[in-house]
Image (tube, rainbow, N blue to C red):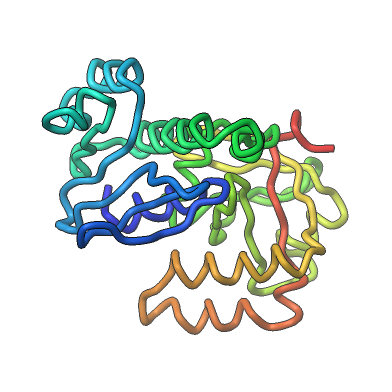
Length: 242
């Protein structure tokens, strides 16, 4: 895992934003820091409870260790990025975000509780992945095709580039059931068109943050065109889709 992958997962959580504290990046919600990066490409930090910390250290002793001193005893936990598993980091960041909501009060707690959707580990894996395999239509002959996914507030979005008549996006308009590939898992989904201008804007910002390389920039710019903005979809697990 890299600094950028840690950052993408953290910023995909509800209400999260990036700031800075004592010279290194941090991630906060409800006015409270729930995670940070050292900025050296080696280590991050998540604010867990002592019991949560003990569980992660037991399960992944090389990737999670208590921070030194009183902070560590209170639950602040170092994440060694090179040894960390994306799913475990996603789970830890999700718990850290919820912990800040617990401290901020019941309103913030409700805001931090995700709507029914993908499991946190699945969301974390999608947030870290540059390509998501998508198969459109329950009754189509489509194969899995790679799309660019982004996660915003724990929800999964993508936008079509080609808009071909028989492409994945237009197939989903006719038959919204399909599947995605996350690691070795195949998950049945429903595709829902996104009409909200606010969410479409957020998707564009998420694309710019997740795909910053020179080779990606023309696609990030192209995704802002009117016809591609209109081809924004949200993927939901079928059990959660309504």
